[in-house]
Amino acid sequence: MASSTSLLSLTPSLIRTSCKLPRVACSLDSSAATSSVSKQDVVVVGGGIAGLAVSLSLHKLGVNSIVLEQGRALRTGGTSLTLFKNGWRVLDSLGVGDELRQNFLPIQGMVMKSENGTELRSFSFDEEAPGQEVRAVERRILLETLANKLPPNTISYSSRVKSVNAQGGDGTLLKLEDGRQILAKLVIGCDGVNSPIAKWMGFSDAKFVGHCAFRGLAEYSDGQPFESKVNYIYGAGIRAGFVPVSKSKVYWFVCFNSDSPGMRNTDPSQLKKEALNLVKNFPSDLLEAINSTKAESIIKTPLVDRWLWPGRSPPAYRNGVVLVGDAWHPMTPNLGQGACCALEDSVVLATKLSGAINKGEEAINQAMKEYSEERWYRVFPLTVRASLVGSLVQWDNPLVCALRNYVFIPKLVRLGPFLEHTNFECELIEPEPVVSS
Image 1 (cartoon, rainbow, N blue to C red):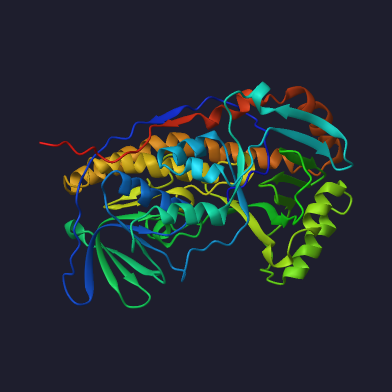
Image 2: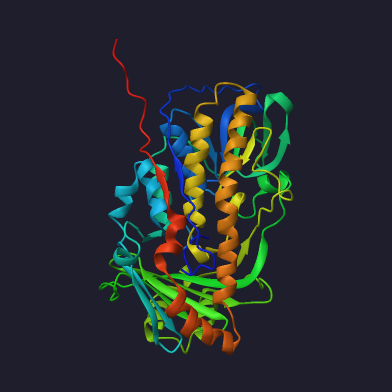
């Protein structure tokens, strides 16, 4: 869950990362060892944003992979996610940035309001964060765009992993629920927040942070009426917001404090009523967006994260198995960096592996170690900051809320320093040019 729900930071700091992607060409052949066990060089578990991005990154660098997706098709449910310039740099490096930009509006700025509609602060990205790029992106379109760039038959649907077993120097054996078995030299776990791969590697479950969120995608057949800005609204223990996605769609969210994740509710009409009731006294623009949303498209999820404490959390790799995105570092959406970091992970890992994949187990493990160490310094601080920001903006004490609304937001928040964490550069990934003899 990566859509942005806040743009406040307690400890803004510059985290500038770059990845220079080498151009390599390597051929990987797979063959079946027996009638029941197939051999593969690289297996990506999970066909979400992280899985498709890492597979495409490897493909563009000459490394073949297969993607195991448990669904019968791409899981294109969900609403929208916010991508900042670091996410767009990765998409540009994969050659899909401009194709996606055609579908989504550039966001020009941000407005913060109290629940009674009073404007607390407004920002222009051009003025206060030059060079920033922000767009809300439909998850479905992003997944379909990435998938369409992969070679035919890269994605194996209805492929749910049942168990993982290390086979020493031979690789890792994946047993699927339908009885198939795959022996892989390298397994890349991109299987989300509740990752079985991460559990097998010794990671704890993601922790509920005390907030839940409703999300939806409003549709306006005659065109949506809003300026191209992120709108945030702060109440006591509740915050909400909305942002135009395209000329006809608007993404919105409602985040509220909760003692527990709550029971799973699959009644669409009830979810819509609950969301509206929480913000019944909020500005009418937000209520209009919720009312313009089909009930069956509204989702409710608990917010969770995992803090990768040094010395306590396992590394991201283990004997030919490595984690990417939410499977490794689930974070709350308060910085809008969940999907962006998953995309960053993908190109960094592909860079490390592309030069090691044909050099044997030791080289592959060294590449995964370098990836794990480099990315930890990036994702651990962001996970912590996202959690702290969520706690700050979800206060329900009236006095503290007043300080937030009339001191912190209008006088202390600076957009430029806050967004320094979006500095990340990638070169265009291109196939190795053919040299004629």
